[in-house]
Length: 286
View: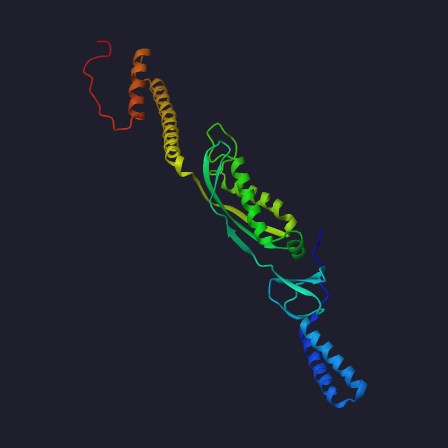
């Protein structure tokens, strides 16, 4: 594994002045020096000309990966005009924060239901040597591995869990799912010198062919949950009413009258529509 090291380079501004002086001096020497010295001046001019190829610019949040005949020579992150061995080949690598949104992937969740899922990945290069030498195309590598991690995550967890299911769900536990996605993407991209800053789902839905059926299921589950809460509350209110009537000795009720009262109260409290009172002129025994 190749890790990033600092390249041996110098300030381009100082070398620019030096090369200008040498260029003028060697050019003048060609015309004024005789014989062998003129040949030396010509060679010096050629060397100075080659040295001009050693200049390069480094932008803010950018690194220059330097290679000498295919061998890694270091990375220069110092901004501005720089100079290094003119025989070095130079490759720019952006160190800026980047993000991309994956396409909508169609996969089956942990329960086998087809879903559509997409994510936004925020990342940046932290090791230029690994990004250049450990993978063939680090940008494409980030895209493919992120989508692979997203597919794996989608098949590991259900879209939503039932009441008895204590597993994480893609829909209800968004923060925990985002953290797990970030960790998995980071594990896959570690060898490429990439740091994942954030990973979060940007789209999550059932596939169109089952969306209507799952919507009806969600609505039914919501109705059942609401009914359960209503019934539990109604039973508590009826129990409180009977206890208060008994404690305050408002009326003495036998078992049959209690049953009738409980039935009437539950109908009133659990009904969908407003109850219409009916005056009973007789008794429940007639």
